[in-house]
Image 1 (tube, rainbow, N blue to C red):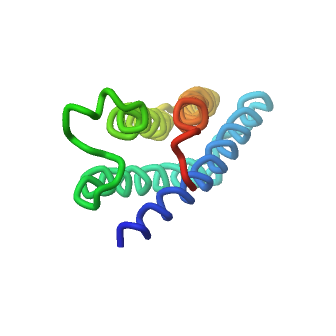
Image 2 (cartoon, helix red, strand yellow):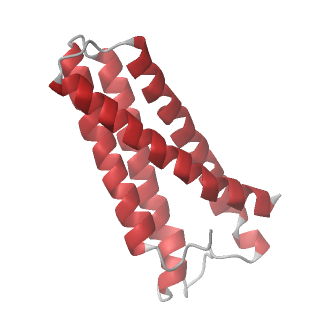
Length: 148
């Protein structure tokens, strides 16, 4: 079960990255061309929202159960001294939580805004921040620790 969760968590990131790029591009096109915010835009944001929260849930489960399986996340005095342990126990978890918060804020604020152009702008800005944060955290800070 543990290995299945790790593999799912590893491969779901590609769907999230793809969806982030799609939502950002669609929002940018909608903003520049003054296209009305449609049901299609909303569904793309919703699918990203669902994938990101599913990924977060799997990540939380892995965070909690990984110490019991003798894997990376440990809760002892050596964690902060070892860069790999610190990355998975603190840096990755905190930054991904912030990225999911950006995705959530993008979706909720776009739904509550009555002006279509502001919806596109909010989806663009918050999702671009989430994408940037994910790329920096996963591929630059933790690239040497990722095994999948």
